[in-house]
Length: 381
Image 1: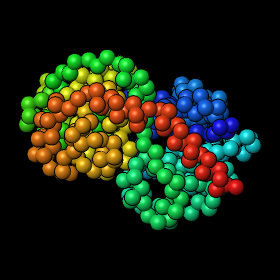
Image 2: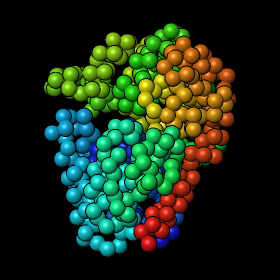
Image 3: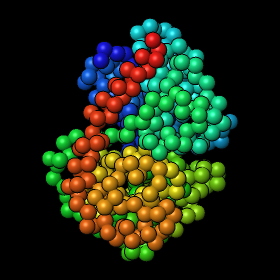
Image 4: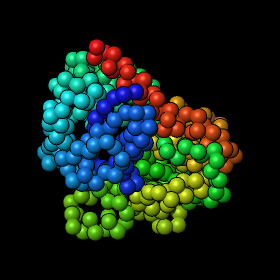
């Protein structure tokens, strides 16, 4: 497909990220597949991004993720500054056929005035910005897609009128996964992702301790990548214990349980350290307390032959085949979650891998996005 696409990944993290970074991992997975199909990609990201693209556009030299949960009046200018750079780039050239935007709220509200066909991917809980979506007015410039059917089922009418469909997330770990030798399982379970109340690490701690199964938490705490980073960071900025919701959650509900044996916080992992942790886990535990829209950790776990056990909500029923690639419990029922987790060693890791190969390879996601690009361009006339 002979296209030039400006891929707007935003100002928060490099592409690919070093460890945590759901949206940025999705973009890093998508861009190489698009370029293999002849799409010319202009990356709008931060200066430390290393993903190969035809051109790069940056406003910030480094990712601004550490500021993401700062008070609004301190951080609101960050995405706007990034979008100003994107608009300046679009005004200065006439060869961009389509913008693929991944920046929450600021992206569609700004790009609606750019007069360039835009596909805006919704990666988040739509209830978080209900007034914006309920009054959405993008003219004919911006169209949207979701990352699960469950997510789009909650869209208000003005947003629903702009929806072109949903595309499930993919992982490079699914490429050739059927030929990868799976390691022996250890005795731990793992929770992947940012340590925050919505991910339910406090529930995972209770369930794992009840069963006597070691638990590993892999992900950042607010802006802090690991225990040493957290220690020195809080020494310098002790107010983050109360002002940053994720830091407060970790300090109040998780840290007392982290003893290095029953519960371990591994921090932000990437590369072989992360894949080995996942592949050797009995299960990936996802005790989410919200309707997760995307599920990057789910598809990564399946690709590495690790079944997923979680609550039956959000995107999980779309990604997991209950009794084959994972097990789903009644939302909020910790006894049921523990019961399902006990069954997880009886699931076949090869079935998890096969599901990932068939459904969650990068090529599958790229073809689905090319189909949506054609729809956007058709609407643009």
